[in-house]
Structure formats: C-alpha cells, structure tokens
Image (cartoon, rainbow, N blue to C red; front, side, top):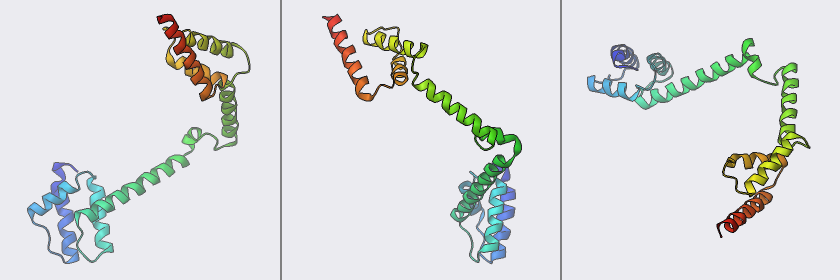
Length: 176
C-alpha cells in the first residue's frame, strides 16, 4: 500500500471492527496497522479484512490479516500459473505436452546425448587437442575448455585429477 491509500484503508478497517463489535483502533493504531500491512496491495488487504469479518467473531490483528493476505496471494499466483498453462498459446512453452512436443523433446534429448560423448569426429578431435594443450599448460586455453573436453570424452573425476597432476608436474619441470 502507498501513503495515499491510508484513507481507503481506514474506511475499510473501522467498519470491520464495528461489525464485529470490537473497539476500533485509534489513529496511531490505524497507522501501525497500515505500516504492518504496507507490503500488500490495498485490494488484497481489504479483501482479507472482509473475509475475516465473515469468518470470525473476534477482532483481527495485523498478523491475522497479513497471514490472510499471504494466503490470498499464494492462491492468486497458483491460479495464474494454472491459467497460463491452460491457455493454448502457451502450450509450445510446455514441451512434451502434445504428441509433437513429445517427439521434439525426444529429438532434443537425443541430440544433447550425442553432443556430450561423440564417438568420433571433429568434437572428439578437438577435445583431445584441448586436453593436450591443458596438460602442456597453454595459457591461451580457457580452464572451462578443459571441463568441456573432459565431458566430451567421458572422463571420470579420477581421470581429470590425473590430468591435473600431469599438468602440475609439467609446470614444475618447466620452472626448474
């Protein structure tokens, strides 16, 4: 809520206390309520106050209304998600939902799996060259290239550690 919404907030809060038969808060109390609930939109707060009056016999606290606002926002968010999923124009964003989407998803998975571990060809050759450059301590080779090359060749963590040890040994030998 914003400062200019204090009056509409007051106009919603005071009748709620009157309807319940409780003593309404004073001016400072209303300002305290307002500060406590400022994180929520006015419409959500007023709706929570109205719901409270319909469901309870005692006067609410700011915490009660804040809890109701959080619950209302969670319900609204869930409804928006469900509505978004149900709308036809959003269907392409939910891959695998239709038969065409399932086929496309399967093709993407197949392509990705082939990219990860090539059997032969340029990717595999590049990976071997990158590892050789890494072991030779080529400063022009980005460290992430070593990780990509190891992934492409299916190197295990132990094999990667051995390659790093060889690189360190080569570095020490060059320094000596």
